[in-house]
Length: 65
Image (tube, rainbow, N blue to C red; front, side, top):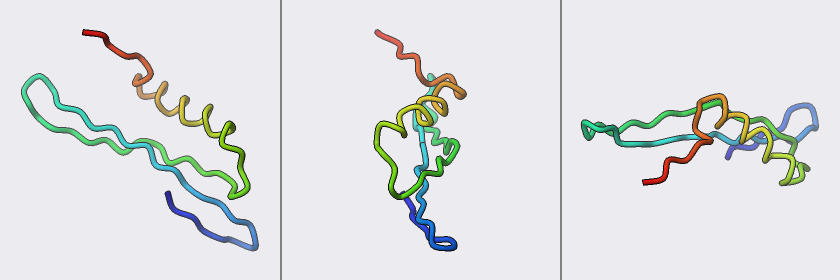
């Protein structure tokens, strides 16, 4: 998480990263959309943007083996 200040307003970024190994044993890391939020945010307000990033990249589904 990075924080910054612009014209008196504090804000931060949360970066969402995903890593996985495919069937051929290749290791991948993907950096997904950063999320901008106000420094005085409420944690519950971050749930929806994080879920939207995961949903946009089809990562919200969990396979059960």
